[in-house]
Image (cartoon, rainbow over all chains, first blue to last red; front, side, top):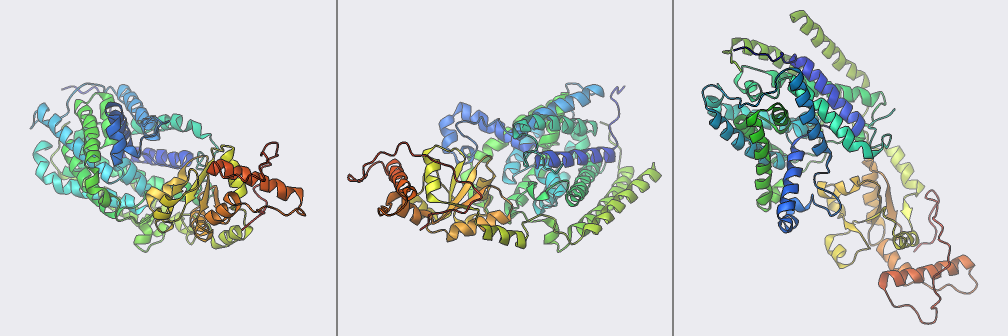
Length: 172
Length: 197
Length: 204
């Protein structure tokens, strides 16, 4: 099977690049990177559009809805738009653009999609509870030497390792 | 010029969203180029066949932490204006555990899933919608755990304080631990059965 | 490949070691006690009830009143546009994040001004910006704006003007109750914004 895609970066190089980007982000904006907040904003915006009365009454949504500001007008939403563009560019340059379901040969595409959905639901839920995801809480948190960052990182990866055994059939 | 530039009004905050896009582009490019658009590559850290996640994650955190520290003491940035994640003990741990489950099932986290979406991974696209569903479920049942969500507040607790270390000492220990992990990771990866993806 | 990594690892360790040079300086800059004491003594944080009334009447959008009393007092009576940040809970995320709002002057107030000052010290130490204290608090508000004392005839014109202003302000805030004898209209009076660096006059 010919693989036209170019090789990935050396991970340490990628890490330094990412660290420098994070540093630049701190320097320019005073905040770090993130991603789950965009999913939250999108959800709030959708609920507000579809059922505005419910959104106003439910405690969790109402905090993020105000009369003069679109819930999608958030720093993280714009950042995620950038992520899509940047990844597209990288993928294009490296010939990695292709519609496909990436899955272990031991499971079917369908299984993979189902697991992706289940995983997404869980992660979406968890990211709200923990006030962040691996980018925002763990990575950025670690870079600022906050306790929250390290605890988040250990909780996420620790539990990942514990659960890995039970899901090994899906990956290896 | 002393940073952070926007909180100090050196750059007009109206540029904030534009800058967000630019930073996002760089973020997405770096992640994708490092291979984070592949769920099987990401999951490798849990099964020993690919430790890219570990290497990138810790290298990035250490680079940024050291950089921030140097910038602060050279007077290039006022670190007190940099956002520090607040610590809520219970929610951070419980949320983290649930996220770990989501990671091992879904093979992505939000940032990496968007890079997967950008290059056409259908499982990433499914994951991205499922994220919103997860947020929705959280919001709908919020009153059940609202008290828990607000519990365990420890302010801007710093990790070195909790361990009774100075920042420099902590970073040094972190560097040594990370280097040790990298060496171990390379050894493990060589011994584990290769996976093609 | 291996040699490169060893070199890079050494560079990293060296960078980390360099940090010890900066040992002893606090990592997160908080306002140092000396600077904090200086700011406390300078008294530039005070806003008088007159100035507050003027700004509210003029529709100044930058005013954000922060009521640091307990929620029951807040529900009983609050100044226009005030938000509640009970002093014992002020460090909770849901309250402290109020001070992140862009383009606002945050004016702490309480019944007197002791609690408002306490909140100001905490927030100022954490390097939040644009923080002020309403001198005299709610009590002074009532004594000055709602029930202004009429000046005696021997007092200078400024005192009389001030009194007229306060009557007008009372009218604005309570919508009625103007005295019949002193029904002079509150027009044509020059409102000059007091310079922020000057000490506040007129107190309770």
